[in-house]
Amino acid sequence: MASVKEIFELHPPMHQFEIKQWIPIEIGGYDVSLTNAGAFMLGTVALIALFLFSATSKRSLVPGRAQSVAELAYGFIANMLRDNVGTAGMPFFPFVFSLFTYILVANFLGMMPYAFTVTSHIIVTGAFALFIFFGVTLLGFIKHGPMFLKLFVPSGVPFALLPIIVPIEIISYLSRPLSLSVRLFANMLAGHTMLKVFAGFVIALGIAGAGPLLVMVALTALEFLVAFLQAYVFAVLTCIYINDAIHMHEH
Amino acid sequence: MEPAAAKLIGAGLAAIALAGAGVGIGTIFGNYLSGALRNPAAAPAQFGNLLLGFALAEATGLFGLVIALILLFVF
Image (cartoon, rainbow over all chains, first blue to last red; front, side, top):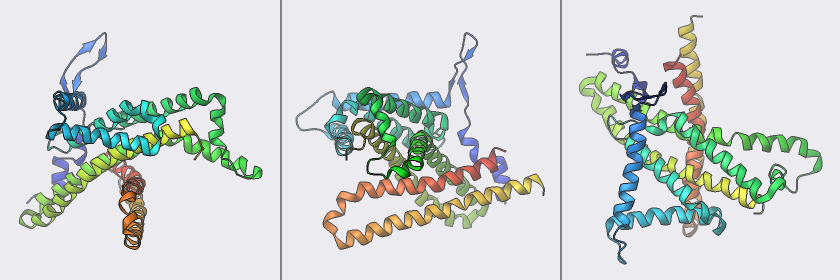
């Protein structure tokens, strides 16, 4: 029977995150090959577009099953924006909706065996987070002009405390993209690695592996919950940041 | 100390961060439950906040786990 160490040497738990070249393409000296990451990104977008187009093509008054799901997703994000930002946030609905559906479908696609998880790479989540960070900062300056800097000066704080509070506020503002991106990436990376490590235990234990196998079933269920939750949290935090930029500290 | 041993010790130390995540998740669900039992009518409205708090608490522990995994598998 193979030991755990041998199994991990044969099938390293981090192997699943490796970027592989599927179709080599080179344009002007740049490597723009279709990799497994790129293919799964395209697949995610194609899946979302296909589903939403087919679900809303009929637009019947009494929605069928597919149309109900599409309307549910719409209502979910619309309510989230209305609760967190108010009606002033509705122009950002398409952005938050596509962000949420993309992360959700990418997470769920990654749960398939042998699939690649797009969101388990910090370059993907980091790009999202930086885009949101710069977008929200720009939005704040466009709405409020230089007054947006008052975001770093909470009202009602004693004057003597300001030299401490303001740097803390600035650091917490600047660390937003970091925590936003690392949260999603770390959850996906840790979850998938954990599943792989437990799979190694199952094989190493032979018949007694039924124990870890049962744990793995529960962990897979937990991973599906986490996949949804992380997409939800990403969208909610985006809403909160947009609210900060539009309303500042009004409420 | 051998570098390989230091790597393993470092990874183990980084994984201690998950203790904080455990405490945090326990606090959130415990407080939600005690609040929900006192006032069940108000509980469904706070379910979203419960999930948000759960995800935020879990993530801080996972930061430590990622450090441990990077130490183990990258270096």
